[in-house]
Length: 386
Image (cartoon, rainbow, N blue to C red; front, side, top):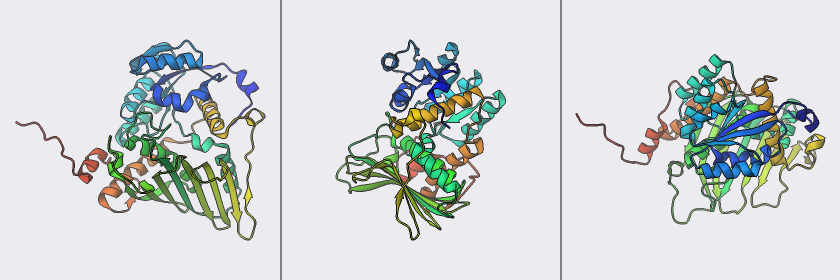
């Protein structure tokens, strides 16, 4: 997945148009700054001031538009879509119709039928629709994947994924960028489900308990909360083992992101953010049965040794995207896997609504907004009168 800077500089730079500057700037600015493979040529954002500021920060003379539909006129090689969730599908469709590969934040749409239409359009145009899933490119996550492929943990039985955000951060940065908790939950769940699919294979069932009051726009509770308030808990069963995904608020001032894997031969803990503890992060610690725990160091390329791991994963992600756009490789996540990932997220709403375990694949597209209205006893608009 990695390559030296010298090799990358020998290739022609790809022109990248970006839709949605707020989220994209938070997540991809450092990875795009002086990137030898990508040249940002255009921005589209309702706030043209933000687009112009980011253009100056990157040191590029990019065109700016208020409407993402104008991006294809700049003849980019690809479009990065980081708009709010409700707007992504339309922008992705416009780019695909123009014959442009798309790099998209997850999830790319609000419903499964629209996702199917986007995949059909991409297949018809013979161009890639590339989900942006940086966690699998983190050096420590790649080191863990190599251990699993070597059978170091034996048969993988369970994974516990834990993400916690400070209560003061509302919405949490940088996943939010003005999005509501509903979109934030789906973005976080996409990352954890991607890793668990990588480790356990695709999910077969899901049981969930969602804090629906947090997942509606402006739905933050007032008053004093417990020190750790769960936003969402998902339990997924897979072809190989089970996974628990927990997304929480915390009164700590530091975020936390951990993955604890249990296998027949021992355990591995992947810490990407340490939270309130003094543990080193990022870190990968393996504890095999009857052996002393040992810390695993990832293998880095020479040009990555002085790069922070969080930035390293974004550089690796953008290099991988460049390879996909050039046609050198195919996206690692297939359309089937992307759909199953979204099905699992949507099934978590159904599981909360029905208070039951849901079997995948889903037989129909659930109406998430309608279920949340019922769960919160919110009034819905009546149909127009005769």
